[in-house]
Amino acid sequence: IFDGPSLSVNLGSITFGQGKDLVIPMTMEQFQRMSIHLDYESPYGQKKKQCKSIKKLDGDIKIFNDQKHRLLLVHVIRNGFELLRAPGAKFTDIQGSVLNDIADLEQAIKNHSSNNNYLTDLLTDLTGQIMTAFSRQDWFNKWGVHYLPSITRAHLLQVCNNFKDPGVQHYGQGQLFNSVRDEMDSIFCGLPAPKRPQSGATINMSVFNNSDNPCFHGSCTVKLFDGSIKLVKDIRRGDRLYPHGGTVNYVLKTICNNRQAQMVLVCIF
Image (cartoon, rainbow, N blue to C red; front, side):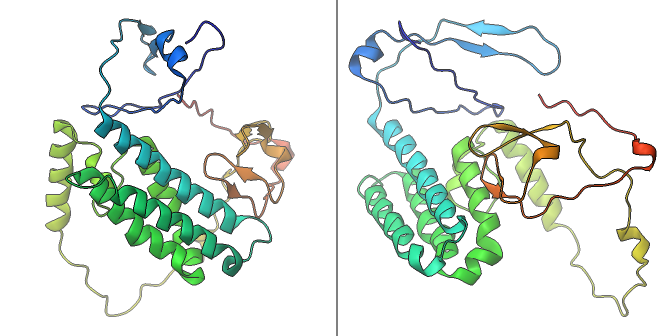
């Protein structure tokens, strides 16, 4: 918060035992006049709490470089993903530019990754599955369109979303998370291997035909990729949804008997 306009940032959920990092560009003059207020409101009905006694600590260039390159990674993936998913985009015409951006970021991270485990693993993510997802059109279309938004969100929110990608293993380092993760891993590794049945079970196709109100009411709201809000009934083919820009291909409308149906109110905190 400066003397003039203020900036409000929604931090989302905070993982138990783990911090969250923000990078906010500003001038030295703004830094000297800056004040920070932190509001916390529990979804369980507790009163809002406000913290104003936030100390300004001395800058650590290592921490800054870690967060700078984390956000650059997010930007490069998002930018490449959006370019290749744009309507009418030709993969072969755009791929070269995307791979050049990855190569530039690779060199930038290498310049700061000496004796830095986090940046070393971030580099492994970039030059491994991320680059592979952009390397071939069939791979991009088959699994890259799912993997890239997932790894982007994990690094953006600093969430350990799997046990495979080296970079995300640096998130969720709290004692509680580690103990639950190790317990889950032990349970999974102890499961018996699946056995192939001698013959396939008979499938009743009626289980795939359940029309018990699978829809959202037309008056519900949807946030679009550009930040605007639209009613469900106004969604059209080609609309792009928040946060990763997924494109609407089809809109399905369910006709209800007597224009009535039992609805469930879902509250998102």
